[in-house]
Length: 258
Picture (cartoon, rainbow, N blue to C red):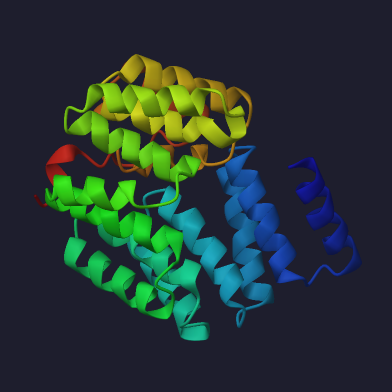
């Protein structure tokens, strides 16, 4: 992170009109400093500087999405897709607001189009499985997750799904496997496994550790699929306040269209 921040700031010294450097700086400010106001300013400047660059719109949409500003995020991702309709990552991320608001048909269609572009794109396959899980197609979704490469992000959602369907020993085995990995790799997936097991305190223990260590992805905590049952926990609310996300509306389990 220090290197990325230094590189972005150095690039802006050399060329203050470099929108991509502003966008990178914006994501660093939100993801590691939890400075949402400065992050938003940097990302808006990025769009002003390079309005024809899909990457800066994409990064700005991520910022809006993590704050629960789904309608704005959709408009911003749609603009990014106008500029680059074949981008795999932008297509997948465009499905996230639909997943979070329960529009699972729209999310499924978006992910299907992404897989038509690249049938092996792991993120699209992962979220296609999670959409099936959200629909209540739990056995099929678990089978889909089991078929994916056993990388930490996949294992986090697989362990979460195991826990939710009562396959406790398998979920705990996933947790033990992840716990030997470095925190920056395993921390966030472990929060999902323990959330799926209904062990809110252990999930929040890991979240607090990754906040302490400034691990990537904490900026997604307020809208994370799988955290629905954590939101009423006082420690989780304290953590959201700590990272500046206390005003983001919770996505509750009842929003799921199962």
